Image (cartoon, rainbow, N blue to C red; front, side, top):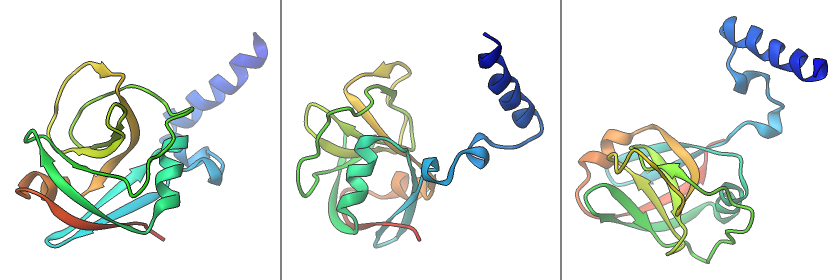
Length: 150
């Protein structure tokens, strides 16, 4: 029990001192950023460190064709299917979240809130850090280049 409390207390001290958890993680655990560049601007997404997001990174750079879906999200097909094995399941469908919709195997980004409960058909990939208003204003589909920000 004492072995568990020491790391927990250290984390509490770091957080209370204003240090973000991401600042104390080893470099390989930090999340990378991805740029989605299209006519009219760009969106920056902070990718999560999970098996699905790592597979997405392996595809990049690549061109994607996005279309609007249900007035709440932009969706696109992957150039090749991704394995969903070991991918985390479940997230709240809120504005700014990037995901894979497991039943269809497609990429999506919510630009409007879709719900308040965890949806287990969604596999989280990351979240928008910059440019969400561009997605909200953009009518219809678009072609975009996805690439890791160096």
